[in-house]
Each structure stands twice: as C-alpha cells, then as structure tokens.
Image 1 (cartoon, rainbow, N blue to C red):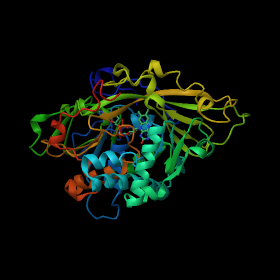
Image 2: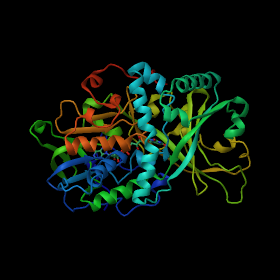
Image 3: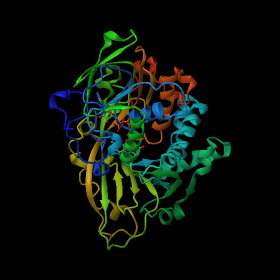
Image 4: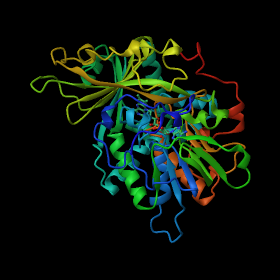
Length: 464
Ligand SMILES: Cc1cc2nc3c(=O)[nH]c(=O)nc-3n(C[C@H](O)[C@H](O)[C@H](O)COP(=O)(O)OP(=O)(O)OC[C@H]3O[C@@H](n4cnc5c(N)ncnc54)[C@H](O)[C@@H]3O)c2cc1C
C-alpha cells in the first residue's frame, strides 16, 4: 500500500505526512500499511479513529476480550491516517512505568485522597496486566520486568518527595504502590544508582518493551477476529448534522463511512475532528534517541530503567535494552522554555533543533564508569504528544455528541494508563455501561465542565 495522497492530509491538527524514523519502526510488520478491504466499507457498527495504543487496545478489548461469548461480534473499522502505530506509540521510550507517588499529593489536594489513590492503584495494575497479556498471547515484544530509578539531583525536590513518601507509608495510603517503593538516601544514592550527582532516589517495579511489536501483535489478533483495518486513511471530519440521529458520518480521504458509535483514539490530533478539545489537548513535540556502544567497550552494566530529574526542570527517561542499546528521551531544558519549539506542533518530520545534540555524550556525562565507553547516538526522532490543559486524559462519552467516545490526552505517560482505560471504554461502547460502571479513574472523565474550564496549565508562560 503506497503513501496517502498529500491532499488527504488536511492542514491543522492532523498527522504529518513524512515523520522521522523511530528505532521501533525499523522492523515493520506485514500489517503496517495494511487495508483489510480494497474499498472503505460504507458503514460499520463501531468506527475507531487512530491506530496507536488506544485505538488498537480498543479493537483488541472489543473483539478478543470475550471470545467465549455467544453474542455476535460488532463490525469494527479502524481508520489510521498513516501506518499502524506510527504516532506517539511508535516513537516513545517503551517505558511502562507507573509514576504515581509524586502525583498523589497534588491529586489529593485537587480531588481528594480517594480519587488520588484510585489513579495510583490503576497505574500500578498496568505492569502485571501487560505482563499477563504478553504471557497469554505469547507476544514477542522484548517485554522486560525491571526496577526503575527515580533520580533526584535537587535537595528540596528530594526532601519533599521523601517527606510525602514517609507520610503516605505511615498512613497506609496507596499501600501497593508505597510498599513497592524503596528510598535510598544521599549517602548511598550515587553508588546504588550509578548516576553522577544523585542525592536521593526511589526504585520501584516497572517494565519496558518494544511498543510497536506489542501493538502490531494485538492488531493481528483483532484482525483475526474480524477487525477491518484501514491504514493511510485520514478521517478529515465528522458530520455534525447526523449527531443525535443514531449514526455519525466520518469523511475520509477515501470517502465517507457511517457508524453507530465512534471511538476517537486520536490523542494529540483530537482537535482536528473535535474542535471543542482545541485548547484542552494540544499537540506537543517531543524528542527521543537510541544510544549504542562499540562491541569491545567496558562499562558498568545497566539493568534498571531511569528517570533523571535534573537541574532547571530537566526530566529525562532512559531505558537500557537487552541488545545493549539505550533509549533516552526528554531534553526538555533545551527547548521547553520557548513554546515555539513544541507547543501546538504536529510536525514530527523534523528534529527539535535546539535539542538535536543534547544526547551526545549523555552516558559519559551522567553515568559513573561510562566515561570511556564510546557510547554514541545512533538514531534520533521526534513524536507528537497530547499534552493537556489540566494534566489529565479525557476519557468517556464526548459531551453533546451521542455515540462518540474519546480516550486521548495521555501526555508523556500513556503506557501505564491506556490499556485499562480502553478496557473500560470497550465496556461502555459494547455493553452500554456508564462511565461510573467501569473501572476508569473518575478524574479522567471528560465533562462539559472540564471543556468549559478556564484552567490552562499548558499555555505559554505558565508551564515552563
Ligand atoms: C517522544 C515520546 C516519548 C514518549 N515516551 C513515553 C514513555 O516512555 N512511556 C509512556 O508511558 N509514554 C510515553 N510517551 C507517551 C505515549 O507514547 C503516549 O501517551 C501514547 O502512545 C498515546 O497513545 P495513543 O494511541 O493515544 O496516541 P498515538 O499513538 O499518537 O495514536 C494516535 C493515532 O491516531 C492517528 N490519527 C490522529 N488523527 C487521525 C485522523 N484524523 N484520522 C485517522 N487517524 C488519525 C495518528 O496517526 C496516530 O497513529 C511518549 C511520547 C513521545 C512522543
């Protein structure tokens, strides 16, 4: 299947035609460019827009979640603007890392303790859920269970984190998460973590994997249960005139398709189809790379994953792979202060100029014993994240649009959130359950109130 015609990519909030090449997309699956039917079907029961983690997980839950059921399977079409898993999911760090303890204090302040703990437990459950999925489906995706370090280099930040940890632990709050956390203080932090300048660190259970391989395997499974995959099929609009009449019509580059229900799994690009989310979910450019070392080099082994909280708001993530390479992303200090570099930006066809050399000598700079390793950047790419004005995903039935469901705005943290969110969405769509009847954290619910809120933590000058 060839590339879509350039005219099929409307300007504005739509995926760019020629994205950079991420490491994860260097071994392509046979379904990468696949269309299950030559012509786009005229109608279906459920239309999923977006073939990333959210869209593919929705298809899998809907078609493979209850295989023993006697109910007829709905007809489901998945329309993806580019190739399968070519958006954020195919360009991320591959880091499945529940990172909830730093958020509990702010969520508690905003939404109450119960809601905060709900999110903590929800994220925590993702590592075993994905481990079980990989085991059940025998998925070859380099899934690796590991410990992850959260590295502090700033004294005040470290003391604050430790203070909350002590308080939560003493009070028995989010027990599973807190019991899994181990704190190492300044005296041993550099030695234990291997990171220069580390003055305290947490370690906890996490995982990493090859996101593209996981997704394409799930896509194939859904396909064998009837999913009609249509790659290179951008949806350019949803007809508002048919809302409320029981059918929605989506206009695509290959003609219209009507559906009883639509799932918007469009993440950063949601506003292209649902303009009411334009200031709520903003396409935001991020950068990631792969570092390799010469075969003969010696350096300390890296067995854990990392987040490095660096001075001036620096925040990098690092995932060592079994093949000896290391995926590193972040580089925020080089570009985040100037919104023109990343805000409302769908262009993943270029790198971020000010960040392009950030990862040179990264291992030598931050890791003890890596000074003479010869580690060098092998590949760098960009991806578009769906940053949100209130730092929360938008999930559930779209206010005022019957039969339309959204799961988007996962920021840089979709891996430990999306799988179970889409299980809940699948139950809402297939079984008619209400949001409150499925297991999705209450604070993720998309509401009219959130859509109309003036809160904007993302706008220029506020979130720097
Ligand atoms: C550089 C980078 C590093 C990251 N690292 C991590 C990490 O290590 N851990 C983590 O948890 N998270 C990470 N994230 C975030 C994570 O990748 C996302 O939260 C997650 O992949 C979102 O999945 P999604 O399916 O919602 O979005 P996407 O994967 O972006 O999928 C959305 C899909 O919708 C398609 N689409 C959009 N509009 C249309 C349309 N109109 N018609 C048809 N198709 C359309 C797009 O082409 C795209 O394929 C990172 C993101 C980036 C960019």
